[in-house]
Image (cartoon, rainbow, N blue to C red):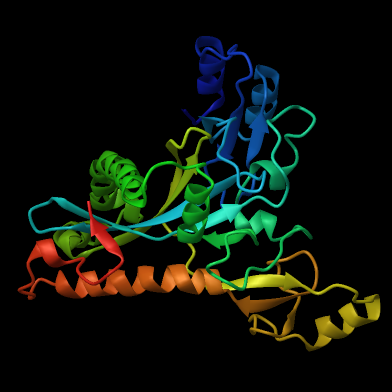
Length: 333
């Protein structure tokens, strides 16, 4: 549900069946990002309290029986390349890779006593990297460590333990169907938004240029998917500007107040250097940024494959559209 104002909230609370035993909801503010402002509600009273504070929000049913990894909740960040063509149709490609984002704390079904524990219920790396339980994962093939792991290693582990009984091809086919249905539902609204001059500050010439050049545009979407304990994939959200940063953070422990003061005086301003002590807002304490092997294993092929497809899809290219994804990690949907 998308609740845009207080009146729609009251109508929803009145008309919706909120009395389902054991049901919980997750509330996401319209202008939120990196997990900021997300709250979990276990009853109508919680919903009213949360939505009174942030009435413009999206409300989703909470999946109470997620497929767990080491007793922890996790989700999957997928990447899809969207490419309109000159005929107004949409070509969609799914990268057969992804990042498993794992909560730092062991999972318990949401109750009023634990819904405040974000690192139990929310998988966002921006939240879980703050936990002292987040162990760096230096090996992309290691599915046992870290809040970020490659999906391929996690999938192999879950198949070996029979937590997922589907074959790898069946899993990617299921995810492809989910992504394809999601993109199909988005595209008409996306085009209308792009062609509306109000989207460009009232500049009709910009809206006209967007319509004229629409077939030359592309978008890489980040789709967050959760598996339930039956192996079914559920779409959580779609990100129009997914992060392609390649670094992770390791907190520096044991620093004294004098060390923090000296670091604050000597650390580079406005930039974060890999391997150097840092006090940027990415972490609540002094930390070091390092090149993340998981990110590099997943995100670089996503970007390289997208650029290869775009080069083949250029208007002056003679490449057969059926072969655009050849020799990339993408599959055409």
